[in-house]
Length: 178
Image (tube, rainbow, N blue to C red; front, side, top):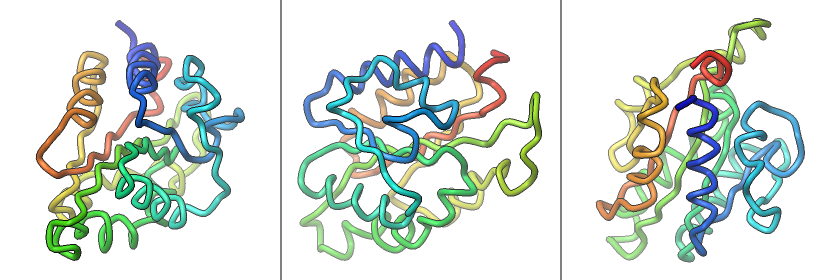
């Protein structure tokens, strides 16, 4: 089992669910390594977003409140930082803010950017997993180190009934190495 293949298989599994939608940059059109993991997903399930990370998270929250399970894709942790307001102050606190009326489930994919064979420099290779684990109460951060973790982690994120959303952190270098 290969890291990339397990990501692709997980996305195809999620795409079979009628209430899922995939949104982000380079989900419908090529642009990042993550694009290839969506090759088996119907175009009708893909929503290409502009470079507006905070807006994307806000849309993801709105979709989730309405019963959709969005898979919100941020190709790098460094880009997800731009959505931190919506993530920390809204998604993570929605249950409390709404007195339990709204408990959105958002599945967030992000990556620690690859440095091999080309290093895009520090602004694309950050790992903020531990910092966000400390900040988030109702959003679980799961770091995907091995291929065998991938499908169970995405299944947990989709099937969970504990009122939490999930950030799944991939390693860009592992797409071709594991």
